[in-house]
Length: 363
Image (cartoon, rainbow, N blue to C red; front, side):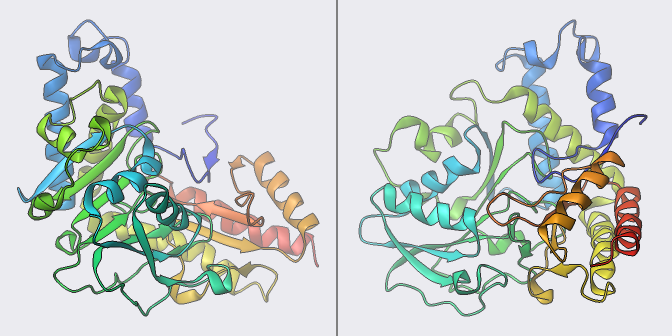
């Protein structure tokens, strides 16, 4: 599309152009209904059809069966940090966490703020989160194990998920790599994801809960913080984020047209390899910030020889229609976020730009 930049932002992030064009086409008059989806009552038949189609497409793309509930909630993943602990950690148990970055730490901290016992089963804090810990040490009576599957700030991603005993449910924050590859969903008792990186716009959070853990839900919680509330009302206890949910459904349709998660994963690997190969073949000019075996396919983090060159790199890239390459403020450096909808053409352009920049700006 003319005048579009290559958007490397970590989130809110790039959406498929096909989806944006369909939204544009239907914005004022959705499928001849005489109104926008944003104007529809969430309890109307027309909107219920949109909602049901979105849930069905999520189940199809992710390979979910009837063993899972699919919820669409507000509040972002940050609210899920609290809700998971409140709902599934009784007073006689401990919530267990693998700390692999800032968001994982926040999930752990929220559990403690909620008055729950929280235990660090593993952490990579000792090396500033530049790797993923492999060995777990559970507490005596764990309620669940919580992991963050992809770490947007530090650029690590689980390629293999932790093995847990059958009696310990595995929970995952998949906000930044959900539906970027096929996974064995059965391994997870609960998955949540803010939509704004891979599956939709900001404003809605998808939650998948395996029904066999429903008997562990804690009673007498505040109404809006209880999963039971939202399951019983099929995400319609209060007005849900109707427009973002509609767009999630369109993104699911786009993933299906692309060939499903297997095809998406192949494209994501090709995109990431273009940038990582450029880093690895730069003779040390560009330096990756994490262990190679734990590199993220979603968020490529790297440094240049000094901060002055980094600032120049980011500025010149932006002038060449490559936006959002500045690293997170807490770690600095550069970061290229290349989620599902990010085009191959953009990664090729960045790789070539990196080579030219190195040639023109020797350290």
